[in-house]
Length: 414
Image (cartoon, rainbow, N blue to C red; front, top):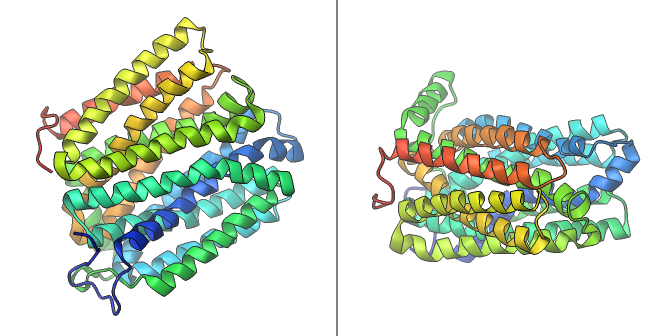
């Protein structure tokens, strides 16, 4: 399948071609990444403006956003299954714009945190709707392939996000970073309204009712494959959250003191993660989601163990080159698990894709934010808490996938 063509969709015009479809989905969900990553270089100026002395407290700009992002996903799915994908996404982007405007005019750290919470409430819509729209159009290995391309483009954005944030800071103040994301949100909304038709299948449109929502949630959480892989996906998401929460302190300030070179290192690692998604997109049709994701999960856990042993040998401060290579290897494996785990979780739930995407999103995001936040807050001036957290998350994920697959790793055909 080279072009998305959802059977029975209520589209009155054809969907965009494959490349445009992937780019639109990637940039739509990319708002979430940009809302996090381009703000990282501004932690110092924001802390200086508001008199924040504890570096760990600045991580709250990430975790407050992600908490709201996780909680609000449960709302957008049922709305999307009842009223359609288009109006639900536009409403979410509108709420995101409100939060962004609040951030632009925030004059205290507490106000900025409130603004970030509102931003997160709106940003949940792109996450839920991107998954639902992709599931409307694809299933099985094809969905995993499309999601890999989406993740590839999605991860490219963080390659440039810290650098763009640094450039904006060089020309103006941190408020302009929020202005840039506001402009992008408006552009995405216009692109979506002009080019993307409604993809919700008419036979899957549900009336909005508490009983129906409860039934769909029950279907999601009682499906062994969906619930198991959603849990494992949450553990993998915690890896990303811990990294993003700690990256600025590890690379820019307290461990390696890279200063203005931080965006370059951050971008290089993100580029490797993007390449990993490309590799997955090329291989998933041939090898299947199970084989790739299971192998990558074991490799991630092993690389984490090696990394932490090396870190202990250097008293928590391994050379930058050694740490960078080890961390990149772990995150490369991470990028081979996420799109496949997501597709495996969504695959049996096509008839309730909106609500299923919401439920899986809420569940996996909250796991990721809580577990990743705990790891981030354990930062002690070394890389040990991050690497130890990765190893623990990897072991737990192996146990979860083993239970889900009844001990059969890399055997399924999907």
